[in-house]
Figure 1 (cartoon, rainbow, N blue to C red):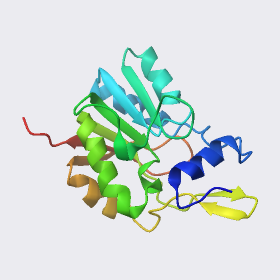
Figure 2 (cartoon, rainbow, N blue to C red):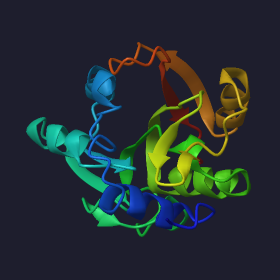
Figure 3 (cartoon, rainbow, N blue to C red):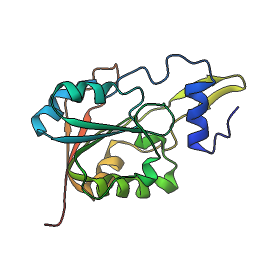
Figure 4 (tube, rainbow, N blue to C red):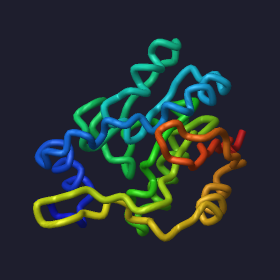
Length: 186
């Protein structure tokens, strides 16, 4: 069993040792494809890219995509708390069902990193409810910020730009996608 206080160890275990073949198979960003196309990015960073479905789709749309994940084995292997790219590298940064997995004390640092590498937009989704996975020792909680609701997230994200809720996710979750047009100087 991993040290569940260390997020990277937890997800390395889930992807590689847990025997859970379902985890990371769901494409949480599938319903946002039209939103992304409307924004007409040339470059895109998918944070928490999992198995790379969104990245592979973006390639077919003539978008230059990069996937970033710290455990799945796809894309650039790095933590969103220390993204290894220059400021303003990507037109759009996506993060689907990622932010709620951060420890509360790391959320502001993570948002600052997403803001730093994005030029214009974030396209996000947030899992508001409980998420657990079965382990040999019982159930492991996956979401760290489970008590925060849609209004709390709206207020938090609004510090970085203009937030709008768009569409409905197509993966069985009824929450909407979040599009944040970032406030950047210059």
